[in-house]
Image 1 (tube, one colour):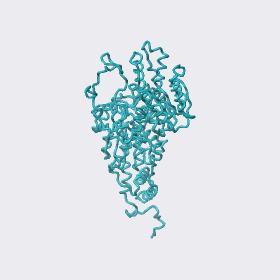
Image 2: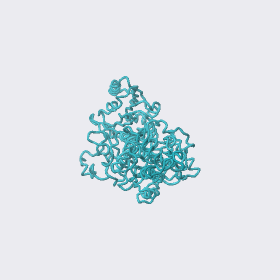
Image 3: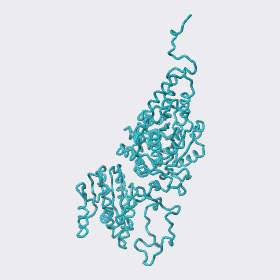
Image 4: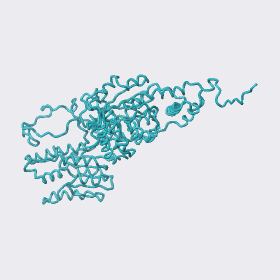
Length: 614
């Protein structure tokens, strides 16, 4: 297992070795809770012998708990590693309790949802064992078909709540990528034979039956190499809980998300150069300090570049990270979620405020679809993780695996720009409702009350403000348990777009490239980025102060002073781009303004007492 909590579903057939493999995943832990679901009241001697063999295989680190209340036991100790063995026995016990074998009328939807919610709440490594329906030996009876249908539904739901799904066959393990289709099982129709009821002479091959080859366009990614296996880069797995556009860019272009949250040490800007730059500022033809912040910014740029005077900023780049958020459906914004995709197209065609301001400052603008709830052009969705993040009020915005993919995307975008010569970076954002997750992050990291930090965002009325405050309260409650784990925090309440921004900002610092931060959303992501890559904040400057209350709190947390205060709250990177000409001017002062010596102007040390008076 990794150094961070991971939820793993282990599937396999009878005697496949799935339990032994699942137990091995927790081998490094000193204490393990073992939730055994198999009944010990049976009179079947062979069944009891199997239970005894499982128990003997477990050492003293295991605390065995025989239960069918899986959700309750998971919630009772979310910080202790746990293994559940297995879901099939749990399902059988639940159908028994409901007397469902004879009636066939069993509704376990609420219990399955409760179990998945408990799994998502685990802070420690968790392993769930279950039988893969197609590999189980189940009789072709009404009861057998009921069991298969229910277990298929249960496995699919639990898989969505887990970060990894592994399939064990004959003792060999295959990690499964996320599919790109609705995984909910569909009951067989009257014209379709149920599982295990294929006619004996029906030997039609997949090709003859019309099944698409594994590499056909539009098919699921099951044939894609699996992350973490030999010779299979994780970048080839599209991580998407909701279907991504069929014409999206090839997944092979995606960065490897393995350990995306692990950043090298950040080297600070050069202090020796900063000292030299301050001396140069004092030698320019002006009273020392008379240009105020402009002098400080010039010194900062010189230290970032490692040279004095600094080189002119000639290739600034703006990246607008776009994504939708499930919480937006809860009425937290004055605009409908559909506006996100429409504004992405507007930015792409140069019609947004950020485009106008960037053109004036000589900056390029790129928009990146991280989680827009719509199909976008392939060149915009190269790094797309999924369609919309989930509703942070009730569930994690994205999975840990998706968070790693988004972080890797942000890092890769920063690398690409720096490698192509960009000398200053700006992150922007576009997403209806995104000030809600941003405010949740700020509130969770600074331990403020929701009413202190919630703002009007896109201009919600009083009722909208109340809905937004309640959503932020619920999100902060869920964020509290992972506030010290940046990756888990981003997954819980950040979403794919904010996570990519955090990766982008942290990687810019690693690559020693200055960044101008924009408003609330970007600064909230910056708070997490500085936790991921401590010291990154020294490579950033705050472009402006937003009217959002949480923005000033975030700036105070990062100890950053804004360049401008223009009562802005648009986003897109507009406030940062508006500050860009000031940063460029600070550099120009350092490079083009004459010194006292060069201009032949007397410095302040030339006192009238030194001049001979006739």
